[in-house]
Amino acid sequence: MKISTDTSKPFYKWEVVILLWIAFFLNQGDRQAFNIVLPQVQTLFGASDSTMGFIAALFNVFYAVVVPFAGFYADRLSRSKMIILSTLIFSSATLFTGFAGGIVSFIIFRCVGMGVGQGIFGPTYMGLIAQYHDSTTRGRAMSFHQTSSYIGVVVCSVLAGYIADHLGWQYACYIFGGLGVLFTGWMAIRLKDKKTAAPVQKIEQPSFKDGLSAFFRVPTAICMLIAFTCVIFTITGYLTWMPKYIKETFDLSTASAGFHSMFWTNITAFAGVMIGGTIADRIVIKRKSGANRLWLQVTGILLAAPCVALMGISQNMIIVCISLAGFGLFRGLFECATYPVLYDVISSKYYSLSSAIMILFGFSIGALAPWILGIIGDTMGLSKGFIILAAVWSFASVALILARLKFYNKDSILIKE
Image (tube, rainbow, N blue to C red):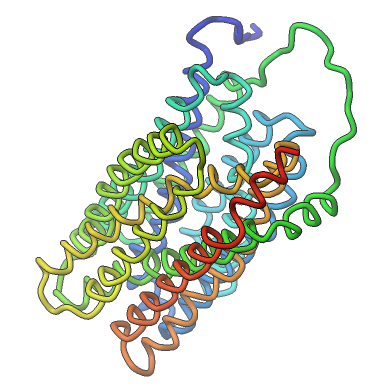
């Protein structure tokens, strides 16, 4: 008996969002589980901080390399099939990571398998949501979907820590990976591309070279790329090492360290994105320009910088939790405006490519953060590494200020001509 999916039903467009929400929840959960069980893996393999940091960096390298190709082909192939393939690859890689018997096999499953699988997912899911949701529902659909990232990191951090404490880190991989493989089967039945009522006239698609050229001719886009890279570098370093740092500093269980290191930041980041998005939209309406979104981002960067330093050097658990919460809240002010600012100065036909370029450079350079912090951890202690992260984070504000004062107005006018 053949099971069919009626994509024309009114609710189906929200079913698509729900399916992608769950897939992204598993995506973020599989990624974060490694950071939570890192101390157990490190002990098993007898690896140094720098070695574990290098492994975390390799994952980001593979992720970053795959992203631009996935973004380039997202508009040319079936988005739903790419999502299904992506989820199957990263879930299977997570499952088999639990069977890794040494560093080499661990790297193959964790870095290559998960990096490729999640790299395909990144630039594809937003296109599928936009395919089903027009301007009347797109904002709500994408905002709802984004909550899966924050919830996935928090919930899966706690679950991975609890499973690791009671069963061993391998079982976190078995459970998360197995659930993902099972869910892939359901998506294969229910997730479909939207059918068009009539054949669409084929138009010439911009090449990757055209996208690169269009991006790097725009000074504001370059400034946004620098700021985005600084932010990703900091966030990648924090996500990798904060669970271990807080566990060792305050002698917590793996589950408790996973909860505190991720909960306070992600719950306030959700609030920061929602508040910042509302403020930014009102500024645009009032000023009839998106230029002041950059000031909102600068404010978020400068307020979050001391929080990054404090959460790594304070010996008081309450202060660390407050710093984590502050980092998340002010980080949200930056994240809510990143792509709106970029799309103000980039032609619409290069949206997917420009997003892929941002992710490529951001995660390629950001991939170095876990390794650098691991080296610092071996020599001077991880607390010194968080001071470095705070400095890198602060540098993002320089690029944003430059864009606001010198380039944005000219670039946004040129794109309209």
